[in-house]
Image (cartoon, rainbow, N blue to C red; front, side):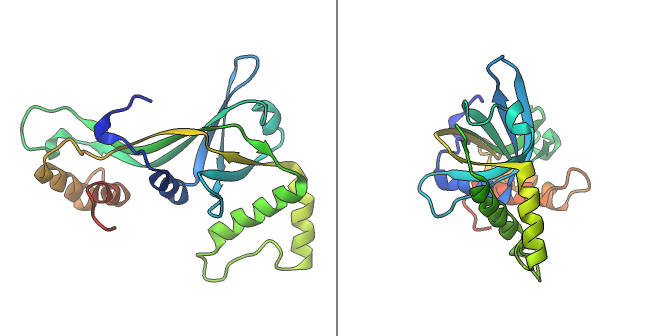
Length: 210
């Protein structure tokens, strides 16, 4: 991904926040035969470990298609994004653009045992259920525990420490403050291309507490 110093997202914490808020990712592998394979799965951060460590699982036979654990993979984390019209600028010559935040994570997955995979599935479920009024737990009953243990064999769990990442946070930082104000107003209150999520990212990029 081409970088621009104005849009650089360089901190581990910035990338971790992006993962927390946007856990549905794209996993890309290049196999030994030179073929590209892409799949889509949710991931969860290991907040208790140093660096950036993520966990997830794939449904069989995706682990074979990706040759998971045999080589480096690319995981793409995409945050809010959207079209930015030059009609929202100050009237000077301009062209449309697209604002976005994205991170490319590189690392080699470690394949987990069935027991570890079950623990990862529990953490994944808990991560998303914790905000529910009555969170569902995989082990809430003996019957549900038995069911989870049966279906886990259809998945392959993995843990990946991110060895390196490239991340970009393009939020009109190269535009005058007044123009950014207008863009945010259009994203929050306009009649087309409304995106409050993108507006919030733009506010965060210029230092607001959101």
